[in-house]
Length: 240
Image (cartoon, rainbow, N blue to C red; front, side, top):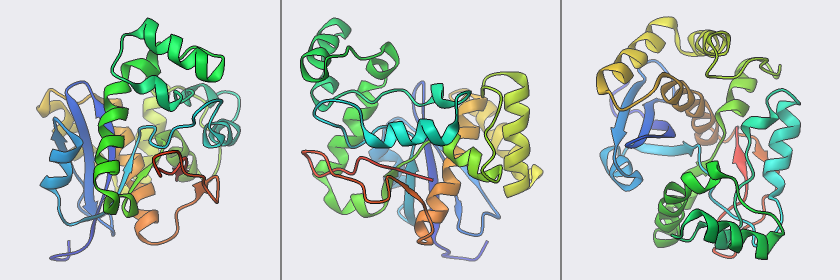
């Protein structure tokens, strides 16, 4: 690794906070970093020029986000289920699930999923950070690991879920082709040693790293290409 080389990071949520795969643009020395908050993670790595985070950021007032639909169509019928509908902006308030469903139904006509409600704190955390620090919006982007894995597969749809044995093997193989098998083994060893990060979280963070690298190089694809902003000025888009 070249000294002072620009770093990029892919980020996924984990049970006790956030996990990032961090490394130079060349991808020759990637490692894991775990923090209890996104702010802490960013402060730990001031040299990171692009962050790709697996979390909904820009939120619609009502109805579905265009980027969610585009991602599902891109992934195809077998993997579209991995893209859940982001909640409307009002429904990420710090309220219990029945109240979040009531707010979502009033805004969009549909309740939110339990999955969307469970990641509500991380959505609020990310949005609050970007609203408070607008300069971060130039280097922190929403991504989705399944879109990144599909790009690593040359655009071919992945057939198996990530938590299945076959799906995990397939994703490890794709990452080994991108980073080298030794790098993948090292990251998974770090994940196990941390006792805070699951195998799928570590693999997803590595996949999102590839989106961050493309964003830093000006080569990332945005879904949609010209993303709208929400009422708080945050992009409703995924990069891959």
